[in-house]
Length: 37
Image (cartoon, rainbow, N blue to C red; front, side, top):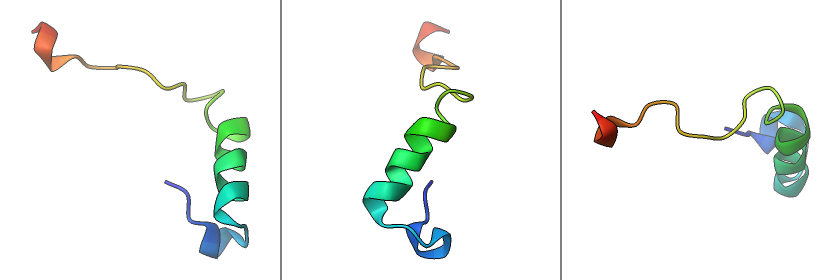
């Protein structure tokens, strides 16, 4: 989760940083599908 207060960023800038720096390493997706079990 982003915490723009402690990062010194606006909420929009914090989400942009997350998209640019975290999602390439931790892509969004389903890692465990309990419905398939």
